[in-house]
Image (cartoon, rainbow, N blue to C red):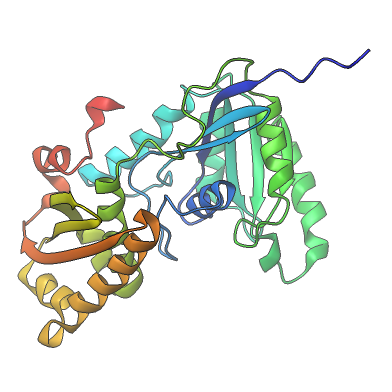
Length: 303
């Protein structure tokens, strides 16, 4: 007599944590492809992004969220924190990503916020590959276990992919039984237009100085597919004329370099030839202009 097959499971798992702990890197690694931009700078992720992993025994729908942070006074900071916190109330499982090398007051604050929500919380202890002394990991995990009643504690390296299978198994085991919500070949809910804007912003985050990337956003004015060619016109919004000059660079060199790298990534992801044109425009205080923020996709009415 054969055993009954395991039931198919499907549900949502929020990936949350403070800025720069590796949430987007983790999502990309789980999916085996890039849908969320990454950079060494905190607050690179500004939107909720869904990544869908479908296998024979289940469909896990991961929701990558902006880093929950303190101190940001602008409308965009309020939007990012609200996007992250609202997600927790809507999912079946929470994956709290923390840094194996340090615990901060922001981590404590996030943990306090999780105390009142019913979904099980799995803590992913990321960046274990960066520990100078691996013997510190076990005491760190013991301390974590004393802080909160976690459903599971999984040390891993999102960058290298170490121990990701265990994290995925822990998530899937806690999803409800049910049919898939998305087609098995779909990996995100975000459009190619959105991904194009994010790829340009990623290059800006990686290439520019410390503060400037936070005064920048990207709007796609034209996105057309003509045969096997993508024609994309993008506007990079900054807050000051001096910032515009930095983004353009001497003789347009910086803007050309950013556009080239973004186009190369787009061609890999879209698997097609891309013609990309970029302009830089000034809109003083765009990050406090709630009307413009909604136009650019930062709409908290949808949260």
